[in-house]
Length: 273
Picture 1 (cartoon, rainbow, N blue to C red):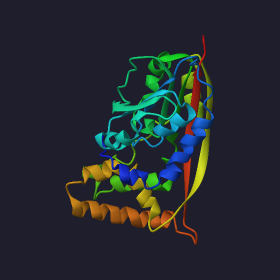
Picture 2: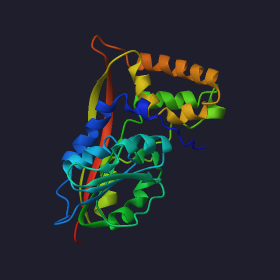
Picture 3: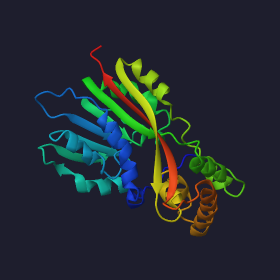
């Protein structure tokens, strides 16, 4: 059974610098938008706490930008960025679930940062999303691609162990639907899009004690933490077991703990057909 995670914006933002870097790399590859003589209309699908949504206003100062997310906690945090922007545009945030979102207007850019990995079959939504782009509009996203890395493989194995299987079985293996760059290119190219797809592995140097555990507490571990929220002793027992596994897989060095993190990117521009 899939568990809808309850998000903790402050935990997520503890590693905001590392989490923002892939979005900046994605942003740098987005071409000029087709809006001429009018503000661009942009949707940020899975906007989270809004900190990267605000960066869109730096690139397109007069744009009308809507951040969409299904987490009340994340949307509450994002509201601090809402309102007019310095360039004459506007930032708004509202509730929407990427698994069911159907655009009700045309956009010049639909962007998503580290969100679609939570949506099984998200590539099936590409036709509707591309159809909602203005000619020359862009669909751009990045997703984690590290689900076979020790951080996630160990989480999956622990959730499926006899001690935890009944309560948590399968919760650490919920991301097999993420495609590789070729898969995304193929799914978007058939929609009359010019596609730029690639992957990057960031070797992140994380500070402090048990930093990989602290990292996954903000993301991949959320379903487990949600499932065990009403049982603090079990929660602490699980975290202690997982922590010990991570310490062996990611030993700390003299300057911090290296944490390789693969990301998958795609930028698709709708052609005029």
